Image (cartoon, rainbow, N blue to C red; front, side, top):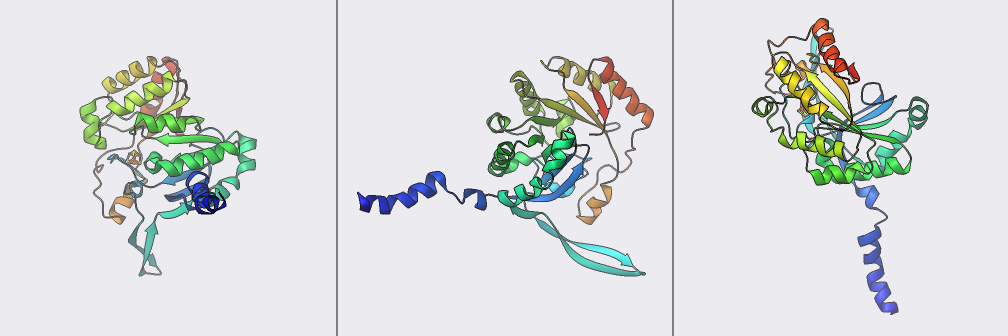
Length: 288
Ligand code: SF4
């Protein structure tokens, strides 16, 4: 019996308990933003995970798309001289170190009703890492929000839902042909996942990136409203007007920028869209 225990007990501990599991569970992130005010309720810490299955034309975080860290040549002009250096986007982090970072803001979360938001990219591409981080946050009673494309399997969403207080999901384009054109993927799975999460009583905020000529047509807005009105709950709708802030990154990273010529929406248009959602009974806000 003693022989048996000596031989198999360590294997059992590592296989089923693995006290070092948390230490070795690593993810790849490309940023952590403290004091974020637009990524969910209260003051938040937003963790940006690398990798995204979509390729939205208007994406202002194109560095999020590839799943691995990458280096690029950064040039700056200092006193009339061009200074170049290699910079890397993305780094590995284990769950334990991530939690140390998150816990720095715990007091702020408590006072503001905030918490942590996992964003990207698509955070659920790093499913095991995400799940572990969410579980750890919940065990510390930290409010959790997952900012997801919802272009993931229903099983993954269901699994993390237990540890997620709020889902933030983009509704980009109701016409599937146009959705494929502008994001590279179908919207069928996304719409199904929103319906499913809603039916299961999960809290959802909808984000609508308002992009002139690509999804601001009346027909698209009316289809979005019809879809949202069929949900059991009335989600908050955040309108995210297109801006060109991230456009310089495309040149820097050697990527094609397809939005040249697209204008930023005027305040009147943004207000009109906000009113439309409000008149239909939704709480609508701009940004966030
Ligand atoms: S889903 Fe978000 S991160 Fe991914 S490409 Fe679209 S805008 Fe960028």
